[in-house]
Image (cartoon, rainbow, N blue to C red; front, side, top):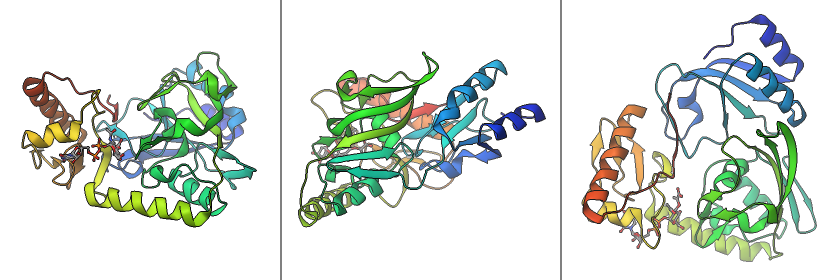
Amino acid sequence: MRISEPQIANRLAELDVELQRGTALADLTSLGFGGTTDLLRLRKHETIPDLLRLLDSKHIPHKFLGGGSNLLVGDGELPWVVLRLVRPEPDIVLEGNYAHVDAAADLGRTVTFCAKHDLGGMEGLIGVPGTVGGALRMNAGAYGMQIGSYVREVKLYRAAARKIEILRGHQISFEYRHTSFAPDDMMLAVTLELPSKPYKEILQGIRICNEKRRSSQPLGQKSAGCIFKNPPGGSAGRMIDELGLKGLSVGDARVSDRHANFFVNAGHASAKDMLALIADVRERVRKAYGVTLENEVVVWNA
Ligand code: EPU
């Protein structure tokens, strides 16, 4: 979708929003495909309510992009614009055991920055790609930990109330790859409370998690991490593997040979290919196990 009215473009500039026309989402997502649209880069949290009022009044649909690492975007010209926070400098401020982190901060960098200041707990998240905002929204987790355990406060734009609000940790529920945030809430910043731990000890934990990840996941390939959530008590990766589906392909969308719950873009995959592969695998698992796997990957299809 293109913003063509000069009036709107002028107003965006007043709101400190940078309009980046005709942006290929293939370049902003880890799967490496996806169509084109105008990208709005947000420099100030405070102008977001006015920005959304403007977009609504002009009937411009929008979506909010984090790190693009758990996202499957449709092909072609996209029928909505994309909003994205510009990462401020600094993006992490420490205060005792509290880390105040902007949602646009890189998750891995946040983990290592805190570690260098003897703040641990998040070692398992080290190899999880994406932004802190994205991790927060889906309660990212790995190796027995999840980000929600450390959340004390969240600053967000609440679409329903049309304003920026602060929520305390106890007002949010964090479950397995799920939170109580509304789908159109935008994460803006978070305060984490992290346990004190010597850097050396944290580093050891980080190394172990990195090693486990390297040995079981296709890290060098374009993917969105795990495609499906694990069903209660089960493992999507194991079920897909047991059915002999590693290597199954639709076009260049392919079930990883290394981890069966990772579907990779092995060349020039399209969203259509990947969606067809997901539907095929889901159906085969349903027939074999009677379990309907739920997407972990977020799909933005036209
Ligand atoms: N397995 C297979 N074949 C495979 C993949 C896995 O047999 O191709 C088996 C493994 O041998 C193991 C079991 O399935 O016995 C579980 O596999 P793994 O330890 O890799 O964990 P997972 O449940 O597949 C989850 C998260 C990952 C996270 C790892 C490590 C989900 C959907 N996935 O994977 O998160 O990194 O645990 O904690 O919860 C993600 O969410 O995108 C993600 C990659």
